[in-house]
Figure 1 (spheres, protein in one colour):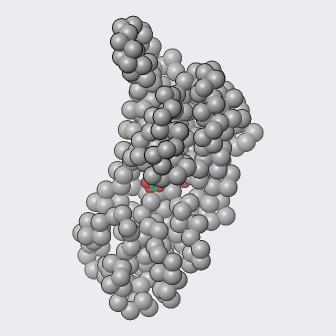
Figure 2 (cartoon, rainbow, N blue to C red; figure 1 turned 90 degrees about the vertical axis):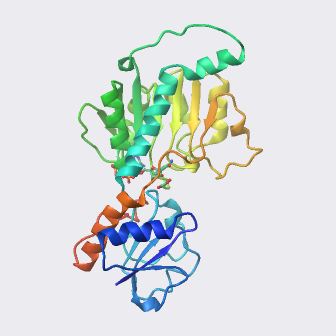
Figure 3 (cartoon, rainbow, N blue to C red; figure 1 turned 180 degrees about the vertical axis):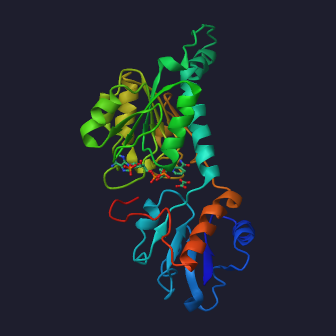
Length: 308
Ligand code: NDP
Ligand code: OXD
């Protein structure tokens, strides 16, 4: 039962070391040194070249090197074996930290102070308690539920929205389209941590922005194609929205001439919100390797009909 690794972005040796620490007898191969393709039963990959996975006749599972699998699912002829998302403590922790940092940026008026400094204007804006703001988190999965909990522990009022109903300590939860508007109307800051699916593509549009209260802020850390950029720019220009942080953009890297770069109400980070450390991510992948070997059900398996 060999595992084949492919990624244009990740260091295979770091993953080899981390996985062998957990599964010492693992036969870890790095493409293109595949050996006999019939010996490969697992693939640990991110966006493999066309034909790579299809050429593995005994493939039993694909482990994604990313949490969001929209790009993997868009691959033509993805083999019909379980596809597992990346679930990792370090990915979750760094995401929650990034979300908290950006919520605090607006909560503590750093956007206003940056404008004031540009105009050499000294003007106090009195700090407000965290409990005076409501932060809404769209998506209450691995990442969203942890970010919501960190925000709650910091003292913010937190509400969350998901497809099915979730119960989270101290967090007001909303579910589905039926409760979409009642969720949005109370959000001073809106964090998007949704996967990209047919239902969430272009969800961050004029209709959604109009449901948010005047002066709301968007923190977009899901996927770029969930945003309609022209609608965001219009909502900022009209003064309805106060600002937006975009960690993900419809095109990545964002082209130098894209107007999103230059809008005064928009801050851009280069898909930098979180990262998975091989040392910690190897724990959940190793668990799935053992499960596969022992014929037990895998965890973090993508439901292809839902798209996440
Ligand atoms: P999960 O699959 O664990 O959670 C997804 C959540 O979104 C679930 O709560 C789910 O609802 C909810 N959801 C999905 N579709 C809908 C819908 N149509 N309406 C309402 N709620 C919906 O994913 P993760 O938390 O692990 O990751 C979320 C996303 O974060 C990834 O898919 C990726 O796009 C993005 N990401 C971004 C990174 C970055 O650096 N910017 C890094 C890593 C991930 P339910 O609970 O009912 O299933
Ligand atoms: C992911 C990401 O989905 O880094 O893991 O965006």
